[in-house]
Image (cartoon, rainbow, N blue to C red; front, side, top):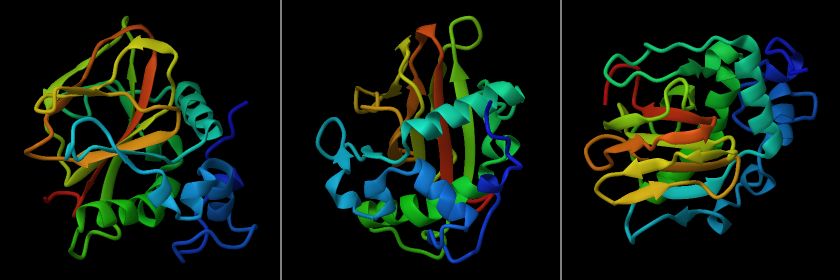
Length: 224
């Protein structure tokens, strides 16, 4: 049985921005699902630039297998998939807020992902420490939608998180780099610049089902 989004571990705790006492639901969520090296903010040990030199695509462990199983289970149990959220490049997806984990996920981005992006790219500005995130889970499978054509993201930078590997094909193809990104393990994240330089698409899945969490990270809801 998948834990329901209304249960205590999914409700937002204090606004301190850090994992606090054990009774804090946010701290419980982080302890349950974040990789320890990320939770301790020792990410310098585990960030790798992927592909050719200066690819500006970086991979690092973020979540554990329990998180991956939880998100996939929630999505399939709730069955709130839509096909028309993005009119130009539609995909079969569901937002994290519809799954009941949106607020927790946003806090994790602010506390653990934004500092990594700031350090890598020397980002500046009022939005950098708490970017607006548009986060959704995409499902690719042969009998439904197995790929997504080349496109730019509406973001300053984008994060993807691999949730499973039991499929054939797939991966994120970066056109200018001539590279297909396939994170090394479930729960690993990758980040890359959004507009202009990193046009990309989802390669076809030939068998099985691919699940990937995507976050468009930018200044605010309607601006870049």
